[in-house]
Length: 532
Image (cartoon, rainbow, N blue to C red; front, side):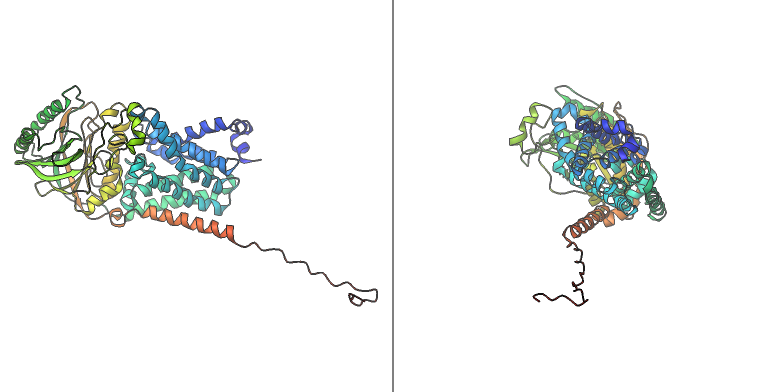
């Protein structure tokens, strides 16, 4: 009996024979991992969420159909993880999800190639390496900023699991994604292929052993002290004069910090809507706040610059005497939200959603700021916290604390604020540096150098200022030292696969030797001779 009939039942197999029904099932199967991310945050579900998608692709009647299953599952995944963009981009969200979903088409083909039918132990063993490697390549390609960035990497669903955070310090979020996919592959084999369960069990045991070994071996952050960092979250402020009203609210909240001895005060993204060089009155008010609290203030200016053409989003450090000169201009902008790629062709997106009316300008380099009290901080703005390489470079450059200034007010009642806040836990664990995620409207959060939560989140309904005792740590994590080595390992695995497949394709086939035919003999048992 063929697998679809044995595992799904003959009726279900016939039902899936319809291309449209199969397409819907593929999209729904691809959407399931969404539940592992905040707000549901069912982190444990990530280890089985891909199983229906894998089972569907391996049952495909042809490699082309498996590739379609991969593509449509990718569409469902991208649409589900980014569903909160629908009110802003409308139908364009579906178009983007369909385009990026095509990245999973080769992965769907690989699932059938290695797990289709009754795979041998060798094929299952290879699948436990090849399929996670293929998934990592999809995540790597879509992590390019021009394609939207690495929002929703599968490994980031494990942000609140302590053993996973330890693994992140060794191989970053990439190692987590690899292991999560490997577990899903093993579970799919256990469910569907009775004859190949032993290698699947061996894969699960190996994953558990590797995780346990990393737990014991990986170095822990060496805590050397602590600093007091205040987060100012004004909440939702609208209206025609929202920029002025927001500044006044932030100013009032910052005054409440007097006497609490913060070492640094952090405001959220777009917390100042005017260039401070053009508004010396605002710069003076910030300097007065710095003197009152006894701490420097990191604000975020979203305005046309007086010394450069165009709009920049910039982290600006302000001390008792005014702006110190330390400034970081955002480098990785949100496609459509902060600029429109190929605006001459895609500018129409502004008519169907809330796309950027004017492109923001990019910064050119990352900056580590001297924030007073001997503290060195590395700022990131908005979805730059999704890029593990940026926080890694800041740690290499000597940042003691990572700062994230964000605003998800457009998506206030969606899952986006919780998803965004959770990313800081991964960045802290990867680098061994604490991270402060300060927002305008929530969720604001602080994490220690191991990725553990410090204090309480400031939710989307809060308008307040809070002070956190943030532990400092020294030392270099393996991830900071060695970088994205899981990605490089995945590339080598796929290169070995291509070389093996190429060798098989071009290897000359052996032809069977011609049978040796004995010479004909005459009636007198002597060899016959031609011509006689």
